[in-house]
Image 1 (cartoon, rainbow, N blue to C red):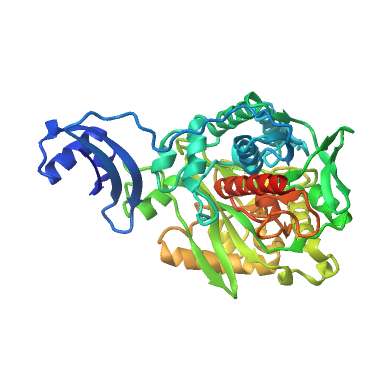
Image 2 (cartoon, rainbow, N blue to C red):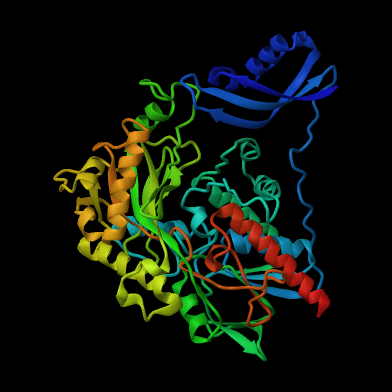
Length: 522
């Protein structure tokens, strides 16, 4: 007999399968020798009370041997023998999952990526911290795997209505991710492991007859009679076919190109703020209600804060327990920070974006004539200001958290994970007041909710601007192609329809399905 049961156990019991089996045997009054095996299906930590517990869903094999069944069966990708072709611009999660889905549906994907492959890209990412050199085509934002490849690999999403989250996670497992991502409530691969998985996805695409071209920046769309028929690249190459545009939220040259071609865009709100970094042990003590912190059996603690200040949301974003802060500029004269965690989440620090909701109507008057690109111009100006405050370098400005709230300078900055270096800076003064003031009040609220959170052991580092796309590329809700031109399928974060790895992957699959459906009906 196979039974699936829910149990609630201590962290120590949850850490060892033998202890879990012993617990089940005792709770169910079931002789241990009758339990032939057990498999954890779901795992979540409940830290709401002082005694932290772990909730488990376990499949128990009673009086029969344990099978090697898959939690999610792998997909059988077969070679594409069709002459039907689709262009996928961008090899982030939206583009990669679009390409894999096209293969499933019998259409050959041609993936065009402006950056380098995920291994070579590592060298360009290192140069940003080492000497401040930013390659505008190969950085934390551009290159194989997209922003997720080298900025954490968190897979938690609330976007569950548009597609199967489990399917996306299963594809990651099929390409080398741990099965733990199918089990944990907040799945995470890690920036140290995700690149290899991304490489395996590329190998699947090529093995099945698809193409992947690196260092191939798309310069323009080819449009004939209000239909996109291909792309024109900086190299002079042209590729023909309908286009899935999955360029990510930082490809500002793409937005300008679409604007110049009078392809409809819409202004969109974003969130802007700072990276907040604590010593991880402080977050462990707060979240696990213990001066000893997480102890031996619990993972590095996470947090999630949200409040409203003067009609706008103030919230934590992309929380990275046991992580580091990285320089995420994608071009010259920019200073942007982001966060990431390795798979074990075992660094000394915890960080998250702390951001304020910004709507187009919140911007200063000087952006009134910028139309749909106003939010993008605001991002650019703020990143340039941050760069200049840093002496035209990637040495980011920082301020102690309580000093920021109290409007004081910080003479000394504690040690930080940010490898490009920090210098004291009055972020409370040079950040736009409608952001700084709301952040200050938000920090006070969070400090009241969690004693010890508002601390001068924590630092704020500027600036965090790349939370989402500053524009939306509108598309038909049914066909998913652009509302003004056919043959163009705006996809993922860059199009304004996703907010993370999994939601972008789901959107990539949906765009692939819509494209294939249009091919069949043409």
